[in-house]
Image 1 (cartoon, rainbow, N blue to C red):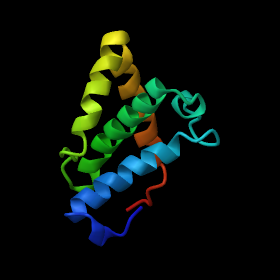
Image 2: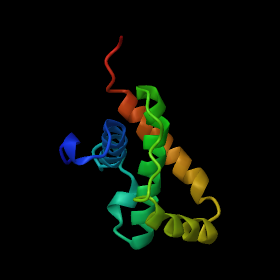
Image 3: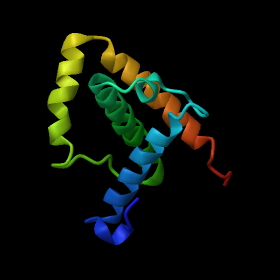
Image 4: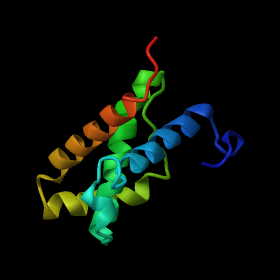
Length: 111
């Protein structure tokens, strides 16, 4: 992760951090997501969608709004293409994102 001062806001930093942690959770020694094992363009965009959704599930838990900005726009067309090619993609993405979010929540210290 770049240092926090390179982000416009602390919220943007933490939303990005959660996005990257969601990618981290998919490693073969963690959740073993196929989107990280088979390197194809479609899997790249699947993985990006999983990480975006996982971050959006986690952001409210730390008191920030899910991040939506101009950096996300280039991905939208790829997400649309995935959904057109495989209508169940969004359901799968939500499931994978929930698994990632739950996995990451498992590292929280009790209050």
